Length: 376
Ligand SMILES: *Cc1c(COP(=O)(O)O)cnc(C)c1O
Image (cartoon, rainbow, N blue to C red; front, side, top):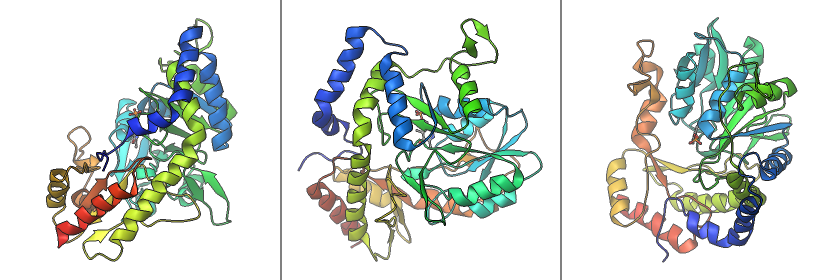
């Protein structure tokens, strides 16, 4: 059996080596390291793939979120609602911009921001909602957009984990996650579903004026060279990373299918187990692209399972072990423990198994057998 890895970037690279190397070589041969043609080509390819009017590449997914918020003219003290159960980058940029983060609980089934909790958290100071499509599963954008419309709020989708996933609407239509809110951000960190070989990120929007504004913000607030109209940042996707991404984008759907197939095999093996709640697999809508495959362990020793798996050479991880409202940097007297029952429960129950595009049946069987063996 091949060594099991949490994310196997080497086997994936071996299969696409020639295309990726050719892209990188093109940058080296033309010395177009910054803002070269490949950045523009990748941008156009991604706009077409997503069905969104504007993709604005930038340096990483955290910058992408920050720049998206800068584009919306939010003012210090404006309240921004986001999920308590997510990676810290989401709340970090809200705090950095001196906006007031309002962390709310998540849904026990899809682990995404709770619609009821959003409704309860809205005040006259609320200006935006930041749903995170956590672990690759699309949040309930139809409900979120309806709340936003009713209260005149911006929606900024943090799509770092779910590029390629679909959001379903009750009229039967589907749209790609990251194309529904006023603006969205993504990350091309190597282990993300569309990863480059360094740092990278992008902002998406269908709004022409906002896109124009953001294109200036990423470039020191310049719209005309050496004329700085707004306070900006320096946040660029370099051409080598764009080359890697342009080479990998045509495989994104195939990669999503490979992740879903692995997830299906995992979930079939765990079905009906009294201690394991496995993610449900939806066969038709691609609403989950399995950035992570995350189990909940109930009435069982999650940490003991983790030690058991690690001892057998199976990598696994806890995403995320501490709710954001309990992190020193983001703790606040406004938060009450009873407002976060689901997050407080999930941080004790979740465990993520290896998930990537190169898992084979032998590896999956060894992993599922090892999990089941622990509870025998
Ligand atoms: C990875 C990630 C980010 C940040 O992306 P970077 O490219 O690492 O800056 C933001 N939000 C979420 C939910 C993420 O998973």
